[in-house]
Image (cartoon, rainbow, N blue to C red; front, side, top):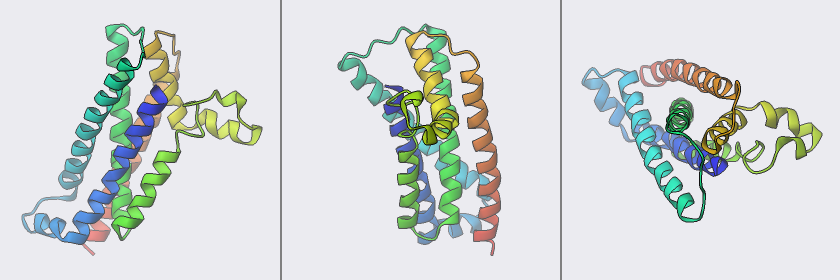
Length: 194
């Protein structure tokens, strides 16, 4: 279940790249700039919309999973932590997608990023334990950010101890967000003001 959640969240968050690219191509960003609206509020609007859209999609995935028999053993605090971690993950990927949308030149190229993000849960612990993977893939699969988020969410929802995994997952999300926000700001200035 957590693997499917992150697969859906990644796919939805990556669509932000296409939305940003379409806005750049369609001229709406130029109109906002003529109103003296900076890049950060414009991109933050895309990220906020992506996060809201993905939280709705995540709720639907949870509802469907309950309908087919998923029964989490999470306490209210564990639920809150799991949802908070999912929000951090969605926000990080949405900011990364916004930066990619500024980097590429067409919505079609931005669509390639959607494929990349949708692929990341497969070489992770989403569907099989990483120690059952080929040795050349285990290192990447074990230490990539998606595995950390999946393991933390899985542990929280099933009522298992997660140790430091939650903090590692949050650190990955915070690091991705910080780099993506800085890159998006730089790319916005270079692309729009150039």
